[in-house]
Image (tube, rainbow, N blue to C red; front, side, top):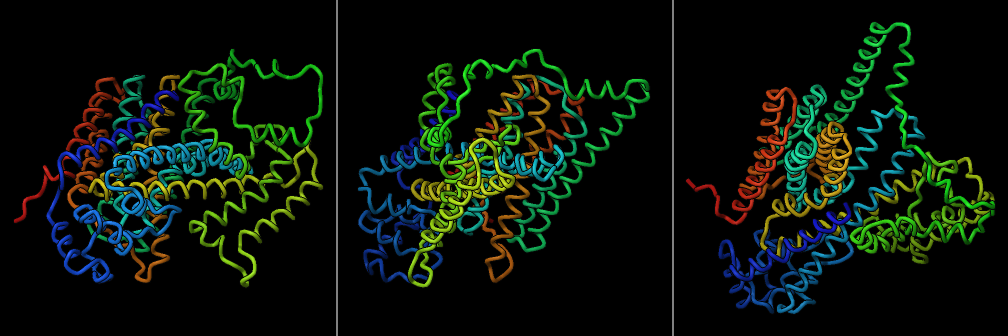
Length: 588
């Protein structure tokens, strides 16, 4: 699976480079507004352009003379980035010579791939385990945890990318493109791939429930785009619909178990409990614990330094020797990220006897985790703020964290976790969430830069690069489940995840933007015809599935899977032709 991940990551970089080649061969695309602005620059100079002129867009920079591009980027309000650590637009047009533009774009493409890798590692190994630990601490049922905490963990990259995109009205199209694009991708390519790998019979009631809820969410978003704004009641309606979905899932599961229990009682009244236990906890013949073979014959106590060294080592040498070359290559790229995350993000594992308690590392987390918090909020703006003009906030946090870490270190032992060890799960959840948010901010900024360079709308970048990058991990997880004999579970995960991403991504993103806006609403400016093509394709795919699957008696065959793949290919062709102006609406 690692080899295919590496292959798809490479495809993303080749996509960016290919777009650059098309741009260089085809020349200037679109209307001639860039030529008009270039003559204005030559006559009057850059600094004389009024800052309040909102008709000037950042994409017009490619129509200027080479010498005018850097001043244009630095003085145009539309080119300013609200968040992030690096100014990618300034890097392309101010620090790289024009002849090295392909090199700059290639470096940005590889950095984008690495950011997707950071998002995947952080969500899978740090965000989701801590969410699972929190659900265990709060004693939530598996159903409630599955559609809330764990679903939020699986969709964290999509949700945080949407939140970052909605924070700036200029990139709202990126969020809609990513959410709709991921929806089309998952409901066609992923669902079709599952049917091709392992034809199966879908569960009728969960399928109808999920697809109807998702169609309602898509209709709400389509209506919001048509109205051009999202108000406070509308944003709360998104979140309320998701709460109603969670309640519906819990009630349906409870009703199903109750009916199943009654059927067992009526069929075999003498042994209902024995049958229930045997079905819910099947005994596996391959449950041998091989970890016993690696335990030392003589027990010895590790020192504090050895515990810290082992805890910070992201490489398992036994697994390294048994894996393929592609897995090792991907692991090499992951090592710096995993080491940094191990150093800053605590992970609580309720399945282990010690709860993954590592005394020296957890004490170090009391210093590094709060430091990450202040250095990632508002891209570090809060961290460098000086209190009373004496000490910056980050220094105060380090001093306070060191004091708490010292008390914890001398009050605990290496062998037994403290009573309040479960609090580290909340600290790890918050820290990993901010890591994901920081990486998602950089992803949005890079995609915005690529849109300026290639003169692509935010919507097409969202439905291609951002949707593909965020959906690769989910796709491989679902395909693996299908190959292992669980196609129904993988098919259900397709719809459950995208419902959360759309409702929480749009609802929470707009709610945060409304809290900062004096007008109590979010203005939506769709990127022309492409957004309607995207929304229409998603709605059409859902309607086709809603009609065709029951007609097939919920038996999903390989033919159905290939039809879904053909639908996605046709949609992608139409979307790209619309973006490049081949398909357009005639003005009346």
